[in-house]
Image (cartoon, rainbow, N blue to C red; front, top):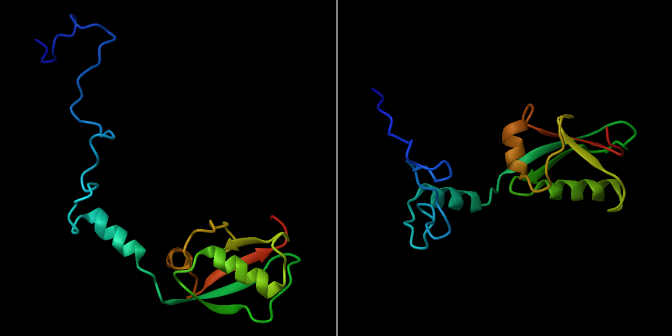
Length: 140
């Protein structure tokens, strides 16, 4: 004898009962209420994310292809800066206009998003205590 419920009487188009509930706009996720306690994991993670990292990160710039080589290629940059600040700094050092092509890569492998923080990139992709940023004039 089968232990499954008899479904022969039920229409094929009727919804089947689910053992879980799906949150909707009227039922927010736990911890998302306006009066959520400060000790919830989501609230703690959000507060930790909002803190600014004042530590400095050593960034090493390396030219690729026909890009001009910088006289000084090691710089200390605040870790809480976005990668966009690194791109703007590099443009300023090379005297490039905003519409001149500039392609940046981390460790010659990938191009990070401009909104990535320098400290996160450093934690994940540093080499010998440096964040290596390769730059070129054309996409390669």
